[in-house]
Amino acid sequence: MKKYTLLTLLLFMTMTLSAQQMQTDARYQQYEGRYGSKSGVCLFADGTFLLYGYATGVFGHYKFEKDQLLFFPDKQELFIVYAHQNKGLGDSIRINYRGFQEGKTYIQFDQDKVQRVFNDNANCFDSPFVDQLAKSATTITLSAVVEQTSREPQQPNHSWNYTLAKGQNDLILIYNKPKREYQDFMAVMEHANGKSRLKLSSYGGEEGYIKQNNDKDEQKQWQEVLSWKTSYDDSKNNPENTVFANKHYHSFPQPDLAEYSLDQASNQLVMANAVENEAYFRNDQYNDNRYLRQYAILQPKSKSTKEIVTKNITAGSIFFTTCEDPEKSYHYNGYLPREDDDQEKPLTLVDPPKPIAPVENQNKITENADIPGANKTDEDAAYTGIFRPFSVDREDGFYRVSKRDNKDFSKTILEKQPALTGQDISSVESLTDEFGQAVIRIKFTDGGREKLRKVTAAAVGQPIALVVSKKVIFMPIVNEPISGGDVHIAGIGSAEDAKSIAQQLQPKK
Image (cartoon, rainbow, N blue to C red; front, side):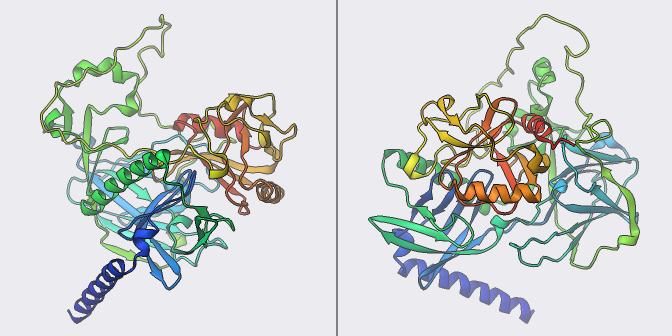
């Protein structure tokens, strides 16, 4: 009891000191604002911050230590488990795996042998990843071998154990691979030539991020940032202990329960006009929100950092996927055939889903908007339009940009020869990030890594164009040299778009 009393007292003292610092340190108010444009940091007067970029949106808190700012991102749980009683499964158990393709991950049911979730060098993913066992289980153990990089501190391996309540047979398992953006970092603030510049230890390069001018456009952007922060504050005050998902494991915001009724036989929520919208959602099954299941979060019974017992691991993996052998790779088969899949029909338009009559005092929770500022570049060359893919007479590869037109991207002129080609790529995979965004991950060969470092070092502040099938699909601004040889591309459309692009970019053997 004394131990817990001491921890509580220390936590209280820390919170009190932080609150006192914010009351006495005028810099919290003075420095509030958005630093950077397409990527950067937002500082808030209450001591919280937002680190944002192409596929990043991480909140946390910061404090002043003399002339330095110390940042502490909100840490993700390594594993998150949600469970539901699916009466249609009987004695079997069904599992949806999310994020497990991001690392060397394992699962064990009861005292069975440990199973690898994905094969080595898995790529060309076809989500959702769903597996079903013809038996029940009372415990599950999730394990991960955290691979080390030169930029990350030493991480232990992890094994978390969960106990399932009676009847819990439908699971959503989430693995949040440790990532750079969730590590603590520091910064200094510099003031020169009437501008404030935030220089981070981990991001932004030598130039850092300049505070945005408080003009009309920035005020609009800032209001969007504040709206996102409001959603963040609400989520902190009301942690998400439940998830609502359809049978394809597409998650939805908490529904307005006035529009649904609980079907006791199937233990799922059924929308009032479900039958009327059958034809529409037959052609859009992933987004079908007429039948929802409510999953409750499970707390781990124990957490361990002991080494995984390799002698008890089965051969192979639950999911096998590789672009080299797509026929043998996993493909989700849960969708019903579309109405026009097996027969030729004239093209017809399906009516949109019929709305439910308005209900007073609705309190619907909407999904987070895109990261604010995602369509703007650095202050010295701000975009005035939204990037859209455009055709170009170039082979596949990464190109330096000779001339760009920020109002009409199709007038952009690329260099004649690519800086990197498919021969510089070692692997490409499509995946989904922690925000549900479709992402393409490109790993380069040793030679390609050096080319990438040189071309991005020479193009800081300038765009790099990625050409696939005679079309520029992505043209980001280079904020700092890329030396890791591992690039994530987000904002390229749906999961199917990402999968198609990843297949086209696969290195030619």
